Image (cartoon, rainbow, N blue to C red; front, side):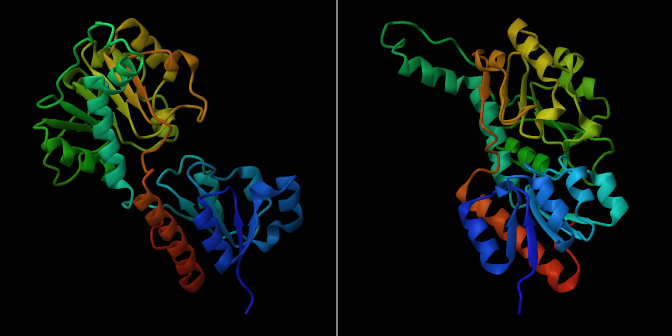
Length: 313
């Protein structure tokens, strides 16, 4: 029996690439010298696509895939996909929800602690020899008992709130609509939430609806004692406004795992001592990445067998 043909937009882990290739006839688009020319010649062969929240796919690629029916994506983000076009053509999209909630929430807590207690900065202080020279390290700020505002109380936001309970942090959140049954106070006014919060943590989706949701006005409301933590998408924050706010003391600090134009991080951000910068490692544990890869394969297998995805968007 011939293997199903699968178009893979970009590389994932070596283990995933091997497992996919062992089960299907895979065409690696990123390895083609002229990707669009390849699709122009072979695109009608593909019913199934594998991609990720990093690579997504473009309208130009879809135009050359007339028989595409399903996309199985690695990650929870869906902003790099032309969703309107997918709906118009009846192409279904799966993501990998839930399996990464714990790791991303753990990282959000770590960024809160690091940005407030200046852990990365104090590490640099020791490594540079400044401590041994008699210099004193400035005081940080306490995390326990501080007010936590969550923008986007979905699965990951809920996991962050659960962890905050261990730090005795009161929690409020901002969503378009209140979450039924949530024990946390809903704040429909984002500016009001920012004024209330000591830490403003972003766990909302990316895309047009949240583009630059965190702007200069929100940062000013967060204030000179407040910290911003972003484990959502870089597009949610007006990066230029954040840089200015960090430079001028409009906010106390920030912890960032995502950026507007990854993997490019502005030099102005890299020069600042009051921001912790991570290379988009929210789901970056061995265990979670394997669970994500397994779920992509499970979704693809299920769709080929039944015509239905396990975790459709």
